Every structure is written in C-alpha cells, then in structure tokens.
Image 1 (tube, rainbow, N blue to C red):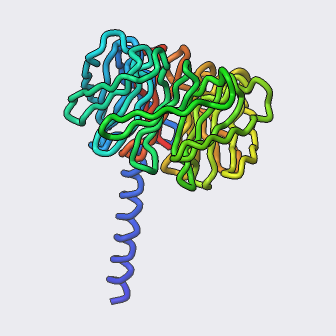
Image 2 (tube, rainbow, N blue to C red):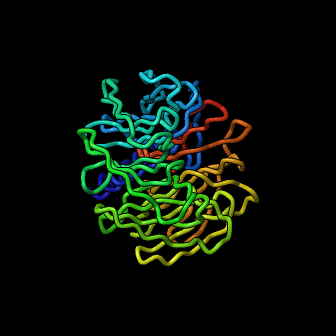
Length: 319
C-alpha cells in the first residue's frame, strides 16, 4: 500500500506539472499585444452587453464590433460625416457621440442605429458614459457643457463654470456622481445627477487632463496628456500625480483593469501603460511602429482592448 500510495502521489504531481506547462504554453505572457486591422480611424472602444467590444470609426463614419477572437463587423452611421467619437455601454444598448454630426447615437447589439440631435448647435459631443441614474452623460467640448440623455432620448445640458474648459473624458464615480476632465480648464470636474458642478484644479500647469476612469481604490484616475503624468483624485478633491518614465508620452485613455490596476494609452510614446493603485508604472511598447494608441477598455475576456487611430488597428493586451 505504501508503494501504491507513493506512485499515486507521484502521478498526481507529474500530472499537475504537465498541466501547468500546458497552461503556460497555451496562455500568452503578461504584456503580450495582438493587433487587428480596422479601417476607418478607430477612436473609442467599450465592452458591450453581448460580450464583444464596440468601437467608433471617426473617419469611416461607422460603429464597429469586434469579437474577442478578432472578427470585425461594421455598421454605417446614418448621418453623413457624423464623426463618431465616444462610445459606452448603456442599458441593453450601446450609446455614442457624433462630434461633427452634433447628435447622440444609440445602437442595438444587432446594429440598429437611432440618432438624437442636440439642442445646442455645434456642441461638439465627445466623451460619454452610463450614469448611476440609468441615463447617459456626455461632454460637449465646443459648447462647454455636460449633457444628459435619457434612454428615451430626452436631453438636458449643464453649462460649466469655467469658460472654454474643453471637457473631454467622463466616467461614473463613487458616491453616485459623474467625473470629467477639462483639457483647457486644467481641472477635474464633478457633477451630481441633479446637475451641480464642482471643479478641482490640477496641480501641474497646462497638464491637459484627458481620459478619466474610476479605480478599484474608490478614487478617480486620469491622464495628463501635456503634463505627461497619471493623476489620482479622491472624491474629496485631493490630487496626486505620477510622472511617466517615457518623456512626452502623451497619455490619453485610461481604464480599470481586471487585475486591480489602471491601464492607459500613450499616444505619442506608442505604448500601453499600467499603474498600480500605489503608483508603480510599467510600460509595454506597441508592436506596430507609429503613434496614436487612443482609448482603452477592459474586455469580457479579461484582457485590455485599445484603439490605434493612426494605424487603423484594434489592439489587445494581456494584463
């Protein structure tokens, strides 16, 4: 019995080792990047309710869908030269902004598109996110407002206190508020679902805050495109900044990853960055030479997905 038990234990250990080696052989190493060709100047990307990724094609004037294994489908936007920009998952559908078409669009997972014109002419809608009130919230860079649209298409707009602030990214944060960046205003803004706005100046002058995301640490994290830093702001408005290792990297998009870290794009550095909640930064070069990794989001496959508008590609990176 003793020898049989030893043999069984050895077999189990051997089987475990073989399984571990097989998993290592099949799985990609952390930081591995795969790219998929996507014509049309892809800009923003989000995970959809159908377990696929959805993205906007600014020049192609389409909404794209890519499966986790890289199959792409495209849906033309009805308005010509609409300039689809931001995109987010909403209740049962995807919602996107039309920066030059001056509309908010809704697309079902089957590809049916509905458009809602904005009350303000040439508002320049950009970033968009689902709010805690079951509405969609978006930034209007040209008209200097924060907009809200209900699932039925009713739009409300809230002017920003700072003139010419150029609001960009927006996200839902802790406490039931929305948080957004002001590129020209050099501030981080907070808006309640009732429309009350508070602004917090970024310590670095001319930092150019761009993307923003809620972190796993109950803080908000944002990119400083011109300041070349990643910023963190508490819900009380206290800001901490972390300089990037790469000079003039131009950080743009940012998202919370499945590994408990924040992941961001470096538009000019041509890298994907990772920052831990304690501020430790790691960078991964994008294989294709050039620039413009833009938006980034966590996918249903536990990877990070990003757009590269300058190279017409959708990228995937293993966390």
